[in-house]
Length: 126
Length: 203
Image (tube, rainbow over all chains, first blue to last red; front, side):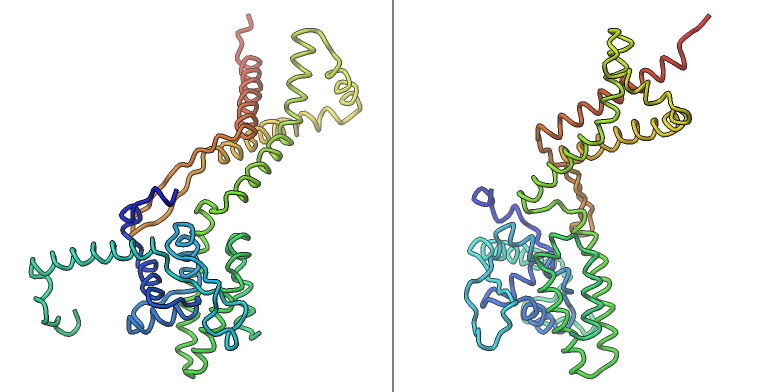
């Protein structure tokens, strides 16, 4: 089933799924570390609750976007109950396709003067 | 384990059992970490915000997990087999009654109906039978039909990007189809009999 799927079949991704993929794009993380990374990266604007996180993880595992990691980055310091997740090659393709889709939307918004041009910033509060 | 963590463990009962089994310990641990983080920051407002986020997250995702189809095909197969078994048990009483009546009044064979007649001849039993049997027969058949139709054609409604998306998944499992078909047949027979008995023209 997964072999027949194209990345675009899974688009658009939900904000939670995209944030989780971004959080584990560079290193594998456990659930709480994913929550922290998302909160810090978005300056506290996006917070994933445990239900949203693990509901998304369940779906992402079924879709082959992520997989559980057998290795533990630092077993001595870690709780054995923790599970680490890493992005799959298919997950990278899907995240890339979603980023491209969003980028095209941003370009459209910029062309229609809804966003300032490159290098400029939005006024405070926008 | 702190008291809030114990409360969260109880709240996790809102999720389906298989989801809890798979992710419950990790969710408890994540909540515990979030709670400790909020306590370390030492602000009461942080703890209140954590509870608000947790409760709203739980209410939304528990419903979502209960209406989304199970990913584990083995579990789904076992669940469907259970529905077929429950449906078969619900069919037993109406199947016996309809078969016994058809044999008795159609072919004159009383091998099934006569013991029932003897059983009901005791005082009071017929009254109870007349009161209870419509609920047991019709209710049981409707329930068997509903459960096994659900096993064959699962309807899933989920929310995607502020849009409700519904899908129907067909699973042609012979046992579920057979139970649903027998339920329909028995329901048609019983309702047909009720209709003919009550609305037949009698000069």
